[in-house]
Length: 285
Figure 1 (tube, rainbow, N blue to C red):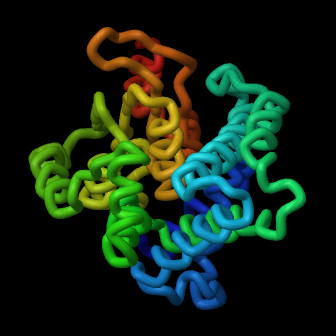
Figure 2 (cartoon, one colour):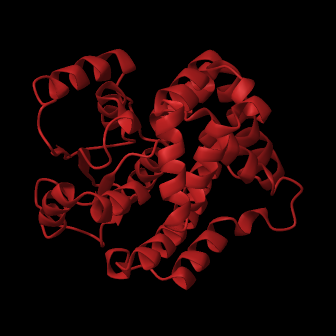
């Protein structure tokens, strides 16, 4: 992203009250020369992330997969709480129907197993690695586990229950999706089985992300598994994608809870009138 575009979004972000995860992302990108994690390549960042999982696993007795999902749960509810605060500042609190107290209870429950342990700060380190590097699912999970042990690879494939779309396939699909749509004012993309959000991220990067006008492209994402949906929401928040993420059965159309919106979706909703019309229509469905 260009420096001018980063500054523009930084200014708007500050004016609207900020967002916990977005603030970390912007700070990491804007001060990368002072961030130790920003100096790591993808392999090093993946290794550090997995090392933190393993240390917590040893200290608590939980498996690495259990630790991973607790980390996701903790970071997810922290982010939802800050997104609720952002919605309040924007004057649209009903868009995030999860109270701060409810979010706090959920994130405290997620990290309760760390109470009294020497590894409690590792959750923060894992978040910093994730946000500073802007890692994708393949970067910090798939590449990491395949390079650093077949056992971990098997854990992520079987126990984590995720089989990730290779980035090469995602890139081709993103190019096909984006082809011929560059002249539209607002594009809404629908992903019925979003998983960890790999295809959405590829489409976002291929489109140009934050180098394009805010709200010119937004995503409506659905995922059946709630914990997987949480991971997707965090991935899209980290990479500042304007998205609605729903815990929904895309076949039966059963929706299990209220939708979750990234901070960038909320900002696009109030900053871009054309996007607002399209986004509001999808929010009613």
